[in-house]
Every structure is written in C-alpha cells, then in structure tokens.
Image 1: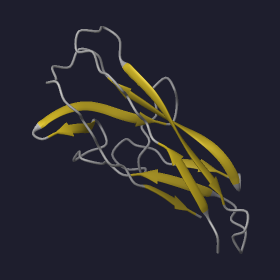
Image 2: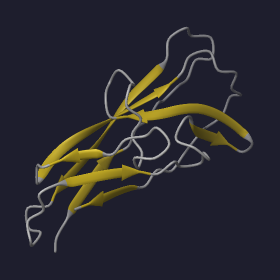
Image 3: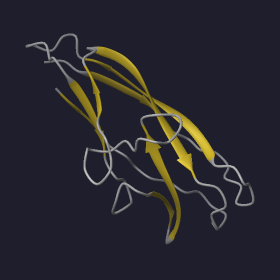
Length: 127
C-alpha cells in the first residue's frame, strides 16, 4: 500500500485588527493513491479541530490569547472542512490523485494582541 500526501500550509501572514475585511489564505494538499491495492472507489480527507474544542470556530493561539478562524472546502467559506461532525464536512472524491485547496479565513475586526498565532491541524486520508 502506498499513499503519497504532501501539503502547503495555510499562512495568514499579518492580521490587521482594524481592517473591515477578513484575512484569507489558501493551502494545498496533494495526494496520490494510484498504487493502493485494491484500488479505492472513494477517498475522503478529514481535518482535525486543532487548538479549538469545536470546528466552529477553530482557534489560532498565542499563549492564552486566541484568534478565531476556520478552514473551508470552498473559497466562499460556506463548507467547514472537518470530519463530518458538528456542522463540518469531509472532502470526498473518486479521483486517485489530486491537488486540493484548503481555504482559510480569519473574520475581520477581532481584538487580538500583537504576536505569532499558530494552530496545528492533522489531515487524515481515508480510503
């Protein structure tokens, strides 16, 4: 069994607390399951909640300070990418090899202290 998975992180760079516009970023997951035997008919990818207790919202953290954000299956931010529970959805495809985009959005006008905010999300591919 061989599954190749690579990623390019979602990086929001600088967040402006005074901006009226959300801060958006895009990440990438590449997968290739073409050498899997037997060949899967469907592939799903789940993302964890990271630092947060729920999928909505996820939280970037800097010590005790947090900045709400989320990861989506679509650029419009309508479908929260998670594991199919509590309002989140799986990524599902029948393609054995594909590049998928992760859309990240931090809502505007959050009161956040200056600093570096991080989160760690695990992607799990199911076939």
